[in-house]
Image (cartoon, rainbow, N blue to C red; front, side):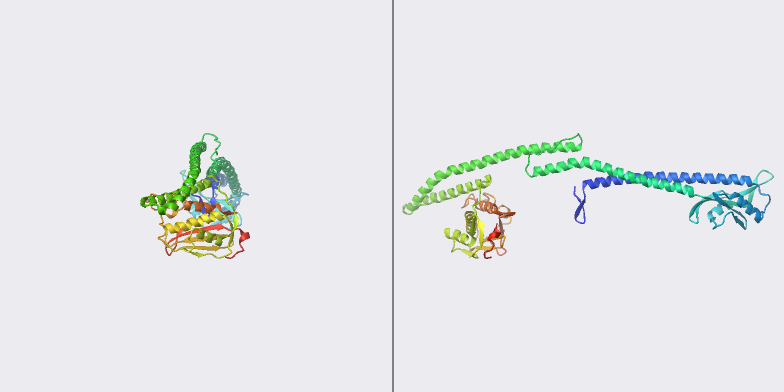
Length: 485
């Protein structure tokens, strides 16, 4: 799964997502249940208060009914309003243009309620009077006819009851709903932590085991707990690790056998090759005096013996790298003098352009530096084009040697494989002049040099002006960095 990222940082791990999921589920469930319960309880409370107020008004009207005469006087309306008013509320009595209110304050009547009452219906509405919730109930008194029917009297009675106790009950209910939601959220977080711990522990163990396996510890195994999907993953990991350990063990055994075989064969060949080299030296001296084919055969045997000797020496060197037996013999080396000596010994000094600033001293293995430079320059002569150039530069931490030529350069498909052992850029060639190991050995020798966290490197590339460029960088001991640049 791709990690969610916000502002360039990873912020939502599996633990956080589990916590958020449980918390969201808890809040959503609590909000739905609490809000539903709150609305239902609020409706019930208000409905009960409304029914009780209507019944109370009905009982009070029964006590004062009937009206002695119509139209009533102002005093009779005042008396009726006072009798209908109590400590729970007050009454408003209206007859046509006369209106009497049983308590001081603003007029609480609304147009909707008055219209319903005027139509002969009992009406009620929740209103706010001076910031206090009130229940407004209105009805119109009727007069009995001699035939037993009734007719509207035009006398409207309104009761204004306080809903403060009910509002307090509703507020307590809301506070309880909030408290329940908070407790549910805390419980959801605790459950999420427990669930995350149960899920993340196997996942964390799996990650650590995979990391150890990637680092080469093929004996890594997971403890299988339970029989769920995570346990299946652990069993699959253990099976995979076991199979990988067996296969890698077999490959290592085969590789070790192959290395030992190459090393043994190479060492066994050194003795007969030494004898053959002595014989070819004699043949070289006599080749000029041998007639025709005999002379050519003597020179061919001498050249192939030299090639075979070089191949055996290179194989022995490679076997040392593979077995980890290669060691550096470090010394304080004047790099310019060492490169010049390499070129002079092989007769290349007049054929190579050099830029070698003096007094560049580094702590290196002079023999391995000689092998690297000789391989790079010889490779440039064989596969590149003259003139061949060698340039030296240095800074306090590194020395850099560039070997370039004016040949066709390296094909882009060849560059990734140029340091592979026995790699041939031209597959049509069955064999080459060298052993095919020179660049691979040079690369290993470069990486063998290290100082602290800095490790030597050898990189192949092409010059913008044409031709191949090999760049050797070796770490330089800071104590020797005081020389010329």
